Length: 135
Image (cartoon, rainbow, N blue to C red; front, side, top):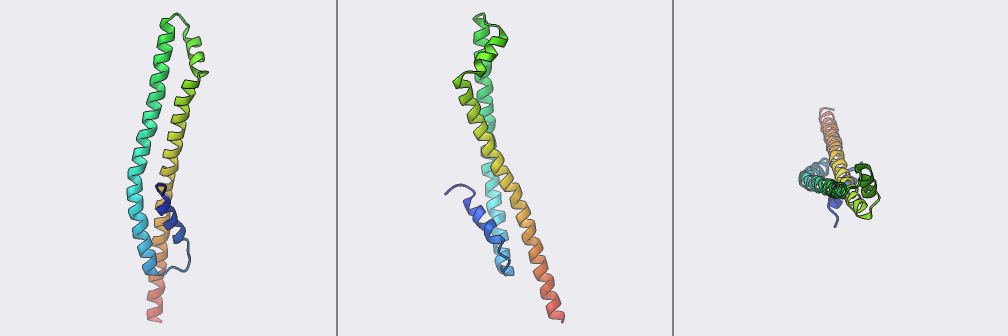
């Protein structure tokens, strides 16, 4: 199962308008807990993205330095680098790592909105129960 799939399911479940207060409280706890563990995954993905970026930059710098030491102009060395398949392999790895990091970061941020929504629904249920008792 893909990381975050359980969180997705719980968030989808929270959209049900017929949930009781107990069910909402249970969902709140589950989503908050999964969000906590998701933050660890976001950190790992960010580290992977930074490593992929560093790998690309290291490869680019080494390649340009070697070519300029062989007498190639810097502009030609950079142009040759940017047209090489190996450079684009590094660049694509970096792009994929950043996309995955951003997707999980956005999911984690969205999780906060869902928790706020659940809190509001619980508050409304509490207020409604209080009004019903006094009527």
